[in-house]
Image (cartoon, rainbow, N blue to C red; front, side, top):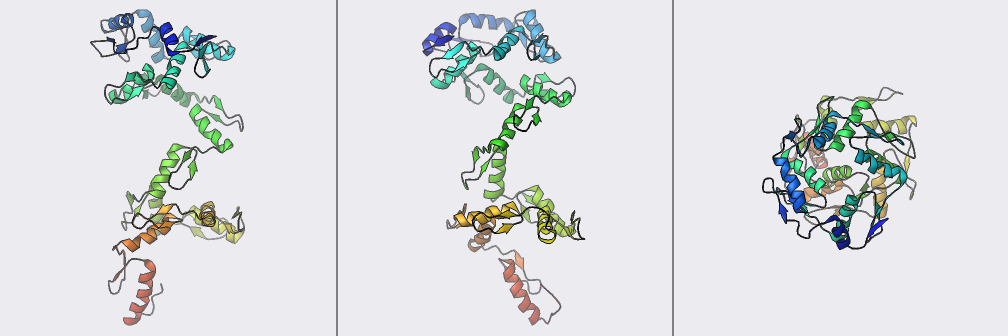
Length: 392
């Protein structure tokens, strides 16, 4: 076990100078830790060994040959334990330490062990806060040169790793490797609880939160939590934002999501795509059908309040009901700071602060803020004009 107690111990072994700007390539501006590394690097600019696929240059033909295996998908070195394949024998040796459990490089700060010395070097920067590699375009800094190189492709648009089946290109070799599973159908990441298989470990990690109940992404406005950051952003946009970028092409009404627009358009088209299998009733929304099945045909599961035992056909309705028990009012009016339990109640209240009147009497043209006001007025107006056959 090789242990490095201080940064100087590790730097001495790796020959890292304190000034990372000591050795600068005058051609590409790349920084190096030693003069020797810079001399070796400069050979690349004059090199005749260039990859015809991505243009990358190498100091000798051997390194070019190894690099070409990435584009060709060649992996000649196979692990004798798990049969995973690699492009380089050095990568196979490093991988084999997974099976042997060997981690010879130990951090003197926290005791964490690593299979590779380079991993220990990068890890030590967590303790020191050092980020020696800086993007020349946006100034973002990184702990590892490999992370900077990957980041730089965001600015350059470079995608050197291409799928030989569908020609889709990627900025990272790992992304290409995962993509290839689309074609092979390989799903090596298996859930230890339910045995569901995934093509990517990221999807497995997200899935595992179903079993653990972990919801690490918490909304700062209402304390609701989510398993994915994407779901949190959707929640903040749909619930807490007043932005409504989607409009109905028939009446101009604004909505937060395209799904809400599609559902609303059925009011104009009178489409009712959700039919009850027990009777002739049809509905515009799936939720309305679910409520109908419960109330009329006793099909489905009621959601019961654990406080007062009141039952609800929709989980969302139960959630709002429980909020009322707990006194939670996460929706705050920007004008008067009054709080409300639901976004609908907040919108209804905000009409107090607005002069906008979107409801109009069809007989006399008088405008109103709320639909119930125009209904009451319309009854009086229809009596005035002697119209008796209209039912509201």
